[in-house]
Image (cartoon, rainbow, N blue to C red):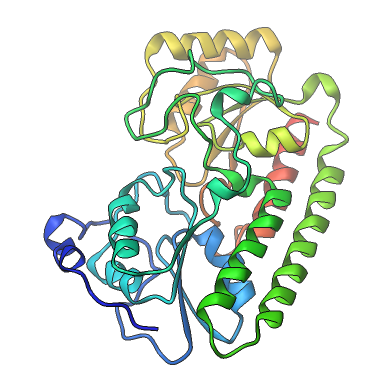
Length: 327
C-alpha cells in the first residue's frame, strides 16, 4: 500500500523536524518489497518485529536508549511514517514530538494504531489506589504534556496488558496485509500473547520474595506505575514530577524526598537508562548514609550487552534489579 503525500507532510522538514540526537531506526532508503511497518519506540519495535518476522520490514524511529519524551524525528523518519503500511505508536502523549506528524499522516490516509489508550490505562492519580502514593494535587500539568491525574502512557510495564496489545496489532496487520491469511496473523498474535502471560508469571516469581515492608520505591520519574500495580509494589514518590522526563524538581521537593528516604529507611533510588541520573545521585548523597542508585531500563531497550535488548529481557532485568536492591 502506498499513501498519498500530503502538503503538510511535505513541509515537515521545514517545520523543525530535522533534529540532532535522533535514533538509529530509519535509513531513509526506499523500502523493499513486502509489508512495511513503523514502530515509534524500540520496545514496540521488538514486539512488532516478533509478529512480522520475515514477512516484512519494521522500521523503529527511536532506537535503544532513546528517551521518547525528548525525541525529535528526522525528515527521513517522517518519510518512513508517510510510506508505511502500518504505524504502531504508544500514544497517551509518550511520543510528544510525534503527535503532529502522526495526526497529519493519519489525516492523509496512513494506518496508525495507538496501543496505550486501548489497554485500560491507569490514571497517574490512581497509582495510590493500586499500590502507589499520589503525587501533587492531580490538577497540575508538567512542562511536557503529561497531565497530573491523566492517563499514564507507560503500559508496557504490564505484560498482561501488552498481551492484549499484541493481539490488537496482529489484527491491524491482518487488515493491511494481502499476502498472509488473517488466521496466520491471529495465530501469531495468540502465540506472542501466551509468551507474555508466561513472562508475567516469571516476573511474579522474581519479585515475590521481597519482604512486604521493603516493597517500597523512589523512582526517577513516574515510569513504572504499571509494574508496581501488577506486582504489589509501592512507589512513594519520584525525583522528577509527572510522567515526563523533562520537567524540573525544586529544592523543597528534593528535601522532602530526602526525608521520605530517611524515614522509611529506603535502600535505593531507581534511575533510568534514558535519562541523566545526576539528580538521583545527588539526592542519594544528601540522605547521609549509603543509598544505592539503581539504573532500570524504562522507556527504551538497552544497548547490546545490557541484558535488556528485548522487551522480555528488559522486564526480567528490571525485576531482578528491583528484587536485588530491595530484598
